[in-house]
Length: 422
Image 1 (cartoon, one colour):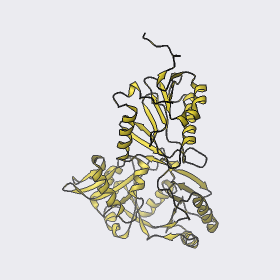
Image 2 (cartoon, rainbow, N blue to C red):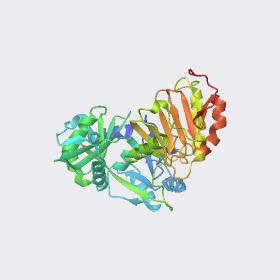
Image 3 (cartoon, rainbow, N blue to C red):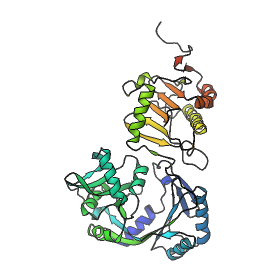
Image 4 (cartoon, rainbow, N blue to C red):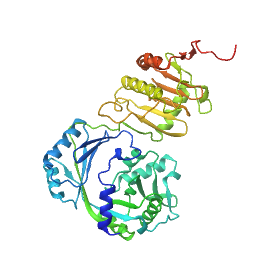
């Protein structure tokens, strides 16, 4: 395919796409639309995306986006594409509003069929790397790389358990490439690479061929020759403009996947405090004083409207009892887990709520970092334990109205459920 044909596919399939357009929206992200543009709020920063703008009052459009991001104290990034008819006017409007441009990069596009597909023995997937020191080494490599399509830190936060292709020599990482797949758009997105290594591009093409038709990358001039040699076309230039409002932005997103070793730490403290392990989970936790446990047998399956009502009550309670800067963890044994600040998700103008308190086929935990409040859903016993005095006070009446039967208070049976035994 020619560069023009590839650029047309990029414009029609991928450009202007937002997280809300994807089957699995990243955690802690909110998308807002304003006419021809979309604002993507990450809590720590924001991005403006759009297709070519024509016939717009660019000065007014830019000011509106600044006001929206300033209200959230989010620095903002805005890309300008050289092939757009209004590229010069947009760049001038951004500069007039105080945006600062970064060095331009090449927009590189390829048909997967045109890129050699092979993985050299010296290239391996990050999924094979479990030790934290090597992960830190990869993060350092990525942080030192020139600006490209996306930072590894953002890719890691968006996709959860992240995959990186690593070029090694004698067991030591030399360079790395990180990527995402735009599900539904048939594009494989190379977010960045730490050095111009053809081995990494060939390995990426092998991955891309599994589910994608096209590959996109943005690279500094020094990286362009290796892409072109691998079958990419330089289709345009991209310049990122940045602006930061007054104030101190948040350091963490409202929600995201739990990184290691934080996940190990919260699991260790939870299991010790509540006297439970994976092997004993079906028997429940050591329910603390002030806790209340309800019988959940009335919930038939995950689509039951009653369960949705229960979850809404619990979420409102956790939000009401949350403290600024809280970390609320959603945990399942041996499965990737998430965390959020309960005061920054689930409300008006905020990203969606990410937790849940009960599953009909797995045990699930919600707990704050200080272990003061949370929930434990035991699907075998068909029970939901809520602990933490403030949280119990917030949700008890509503949950009792919905579920009726209380199994235990303070970890002791209340005597209203018949069981076998003496």
